[in-house]
Amino acid sequence: MPTKKATEKKAAETVEEPKTKKTATKKAAVKEETVEEKTTKKAEPKKAAPKKETAKKSTTKTKKAEKPVVEDSVIAALEEEVSIEKTSGGIVEVKKHEDKQNKTEELSIEQKLLSLYNLQQICTKIDDIRMIRGELPEEIRDNEDECEGKRTRIAKFNDEIENLKLKISSENTKKEESLAAIKKYEEQQNNVRNNREYESLSKEIEYQKLEIQVSEKHKVKYEAEIEEKEALISETKVKLEELEEVLQQKKAELEVIVADTEKEEEELLAQAEVLKSKVDQRLLTAFERIRKSAHNGLAIVKIERDACGGCFSKIPPQRQLDIALHKKIIVCEACGRIFIDDKLVHSQE
Image 1 (tube, rainbow, N blue to C red):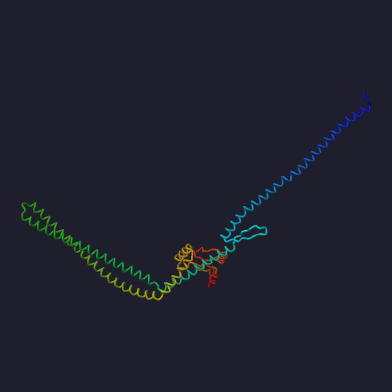
Image 2 (cartoon, one colour):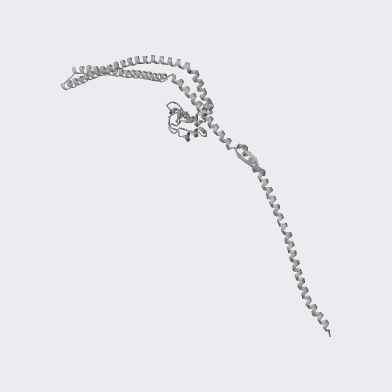
């Protein structure tokens, strides 16, 4: 039989065993928690590391992709006359020369206006040279037209006289035919058997005599018309001779005037052609159209006493300021003439 001490030891061992089991499980749980924490801590930086690598890779790719874009922008900048600037961060900035473009546009408009003004000055000189000739060219043209009209009139009269002569000849033939018929009928009257035949033949003879009278009247009428036409021809011939004499005198005067100013006019015309080649075609057509419509031949004018130099209509101050800036070509609202600033003309001089 076991003793009391042995039983007490066994009971104590049984009590201690669950306690040790509980502590062991607690320690294992704590160890597992620490292991999990360590693994998570170690796994987190490892997961973050590839993110950095991908970011680096993406930045390198974007840098590689940016290089051709920058090169294209540089080429475009060179083609479009732009400036390239580098910032402190290494970024390239491309800026257009807006001021330079505006200046070139202003200069081009100024040059257009000045070329038109110079062309206008040459055209006015040519007009003055042609005005020296006066109305001689127009008078010569009128005399030539009148002479030509007289000649055509004489030719027409001659044709009419020829037609009248043909009519007179036809009337003469009719008269001869009627006389021959009368003789025939008179011979037949001698061989008549009864009164009826005699009366019919006498009526035919009377009819033929009437035809002779009508033809004679027509003949007299035609001859009178021929005399009138001949008188008109003689009158027109006299007038034609007078006109030809006047025409020769005027042509001689014009040749003398042209001989004095021919060289100067040719030089001015050559200068005008050179200036026309420098002006834009659309602007040149507008210039010539305005010159034709203007009574004094001025297509480009200056401002005189706050008014248009062509039609003298009032110009508002804002419009005068726009004209002075030379940013665009401005036209008069009343007459359509082109404006040029007086200061620009004086700067050229």
